[in-house]
Image 1: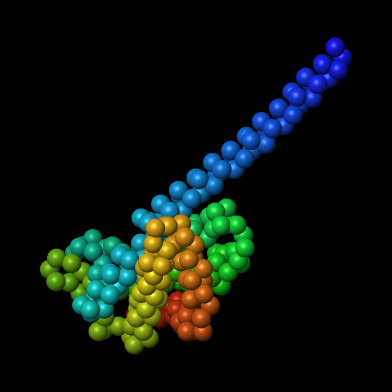
Image 2: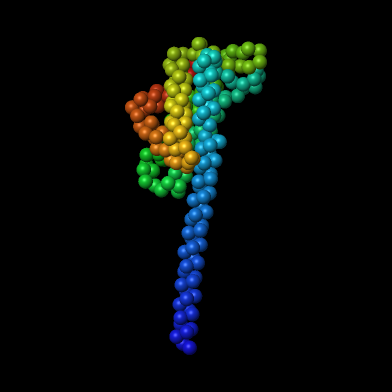
Length: 221
């Protein structure tokens, strides 16, 4: 009888331990699924690199930066870049829980020398440009805008540089989807690594320094 009681007790202990292990695995799986769903939601609908690229290309084509309806100032470029930078940071924070932390130092938004901070600097650039142009905006009777032909050469170069950066990121994003067709998660993984590689290029580092310099000197007129 004593042996039976001991056996039953042992089985109960094993059962409790197994339940705890399975519960922890279940919770871990739940957290993983939440992280994946959140990241894919950001990447597919909130990380609006494509629309930002289109608006900047349109501005260059028309030689004007649109700042809203006449009498209602709206800095779309600053706001869109801020949104993209925020989403990029969120995606890098989710990288670890989803893909593991291997190569995390390559895509991390921690510190100051990374793609997140560059996108923030781009947003600041357009914030300064908009604020310094508020009192001298042109208009067509309906909308107000900055005439790109009247910008200082260095500031115009800044607009073009940011357009080139966003264009390249959109090309990487599109290519990631094409190469990893059938798996949005694989496309996200590919994009984060390749965009980090792009940030490390000499060309982009030089462009980042120019944007930072323009912001530091307030050369937005």
